[in-house]
Image: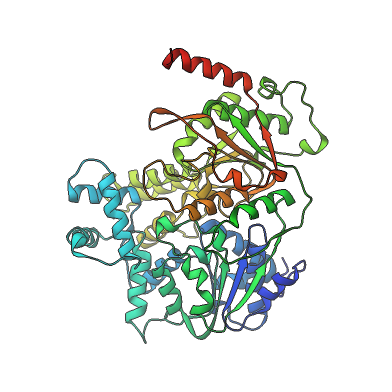
Length: 561
């Protein structure tokens, strides 16, 4: 840790251009594996090296995990000065704005609590109606929809309840700071506070966040938007890809730099995924060049059903790690080459479109004894601890010594996140709980844990693994269209692209002949996206032909004549 500032070595020409272009608006189009984090870290260091005060720099990240990584890497270059730079999510920044603007004694509530409140207000059974109402409220608070008479009554009642109970929901961390900074034109210290704002994953911001960012940037300040229109996968949360596509129109005189080298994946993975995403129209065109070797072909694996899906995955992992027990079920005589002996369990990830897919896969891992983690599950358990504490006798604001000890004893040991609070006051405890509530399921991921990661494709964004198994690559799942709702095919293709590009060395696309969906066995066909991959990049694998024949005979005996 030199703490001297300056730019670290090893930047390519385009990365260096993005780092050094500090005057005026800048759009950095960064494909997967192109060194985006390295560029952001070095841009922060370069700004400070050029005399910009750290407290006037803001780096907004999409996840808390990304914020921690940027902070840690920046510290190795500029030392303690990084502590005066705001680095974190826009929701964390919203929380700071509220606190600095006089908001006290409020607690953030999670989605489960929101659904409970809405359910009690509409007095209807089931969560589906409450979910629809909550989604509508979220769109209103993020300025992606207007408050109309059809929902005004329940919206006002819900807001009154939150005010009375001193609760805020997640969307309030954008709505209320926006109102504060917008109304206090001269007195609020956050209006025009930052001379330089860097926004990571700019393609995933919504209109409310966009407005807040514009208010935080001072006149003549510089905004740097970093992202990739091909990885915009959060439309369902209100994100608007048009913010990214229209950046050069919104910010006159904007400069554009494309990070065009992929340092992560083998050449076949880079070019195959590029061919898929080229079928989208709403994108900023870029051409990625792989910097690694050509690598193995992408394996498109056909299995009879989801049980065999799990068997294949654990067998392949055992083979690559060095074991043979499951793998011999379908690949006798296999030998392990030298380059297959260097994997650890943390090098593997299983990615799926929906959480409903995880149970069958998890069953195979449990039987095999291979260590694994379902990313997001621990986050739910930690939030459950908070819920238990806050609903205990004494209530949510009775932070006596017993409650404090409970928080410390039950919550701190399971944190990957370490709070900076000393817990000397009730206010600090509330602040700690609120910041904890900002942690997302994706923040559970810890690369130091030697276990296979099981997670949704959405949760895997920003991560990379040597070996990726993308499962359920079937029409109806990828692209997802099982609920009969309209499908944004371009977003589904972007999601598939994100899943493909998490892989560094090996990529497996697995599809099943049949799958149990909503309690019914359905025939499935492989995803149309697979046909968009040129044949030269693909190896087709049919590991369970005997199993497929047995399955067919079993189906005839149960359902046929």
